[in-house]
Picture 1 (cartoon, chains in turn cyan, blue, yellow):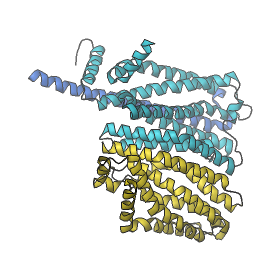
Picture 2 (spheres, chains in turn red, brown, blue):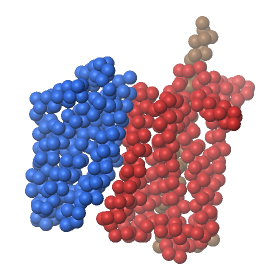
Picture 3 (cartoon, rainbow over the protein chains, first blue to last red):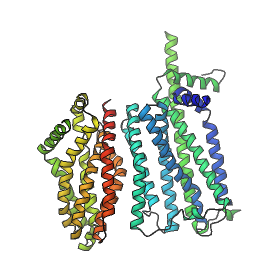
Picture 4 (cartoon, helix red, strand yellow):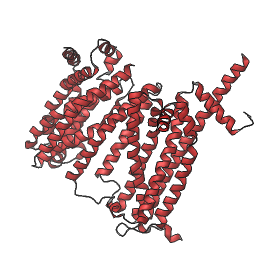
Length: 261
Length: 57
Length: 220
């Protein structure tokens, strides 16, 4: 137990966060790459063809992991936003702002692959169905958080606190938005073929395995990308502090023991 | 072997989706890692300045 | 009471500068003229889209007024005075929202039937239209104080403000325009209006807190 508490406190301080996570970057990236390659080969080439959707269902192996990540990452942003807002924890700030670009990217990927899936399934690239619409609104939430931060960029602490507030407001509203959008489509539309109709049909282990592998791969990639950006954020905002100088010096010496340069 | 890559009439949609996914993550990797390298370089330059000043005085 | 003092002051300021009040209405008239011209269509097409258009116009015309709710007070320092005088910030922001609603929301509600007539909105929908706007315009003002507080020391923050509050307004639009649409189709709008009422209550309780937090951060 003590160990966990100690770890928690260490992760709260920028220098030890930087030191600890420096060792994680490469493993995370390699895990992500290996799993993505395996997952894509398994999903695209090995998994059996769906009897209903044919080969088009294979888009699921990128679409659904991206969709899961888009929501998961907003959750992380909301939580670290609350920590930023209440305790003004520097590391939480870094994690929050580092998660925004990759979260927005996953949301955009979800939308684009959804459109590419919609064309063969619905006969149109865009349909205002509940999932697509709420995903689009989620993208606006990401843009809002990023926008408020960049508007106040000269004052990073203020920018981060305001961005945290925007993230929290979004988090509170997300259930309302989702509920209203689902309710709206249930009234105004005949049920369109759900893209995930295929997913209900996924009971075959050979189809499920690549999906889970891809979900893991995106998680690891998120951890890599988030940590790299969080470190960048900390180095940038704390560059006047002693620990930054020492940390970088140490890394340089570690890389060239001869001490050249 | 090649017929494994053939998605029939869905070729375009499937491969375009995969391409979107891979390109997006690649772009994210490039931007994240280049920013990371840049900031390290800047801090190193700053270090050298500080050290030079220290040695002078 | 401080709440009323601030409220009265804001209403008077808006009243003296009348453009605040008629600007949204002129905006609505301008845009509503474009619809028949652009659609090139007869009364039936217009009547079909009327519920949505009346509603979206009310929303957009309010949106263009939001940017300045806090801006002037921030720039001339009176916002600091409220804080220093010990007034609770949520109360102050609630008073701001109330004043904005009286000077912008109420004219928009009263003007909505005019827009409705211009778009051939079916006769049975007017009561529900006014009622839905009565429930929704306070939400516009309340969320407006949040957005305006977030962007008050940014130049040209209007676009950012729209991005920030559009996701929050989406449910309001769904329920509000939905209520009018259901009425024109001859259905009951009760469910929509109750959900809209829920949104109103939710934003009265939460929006002042969020706006106060944003003001506090901005004044630090």
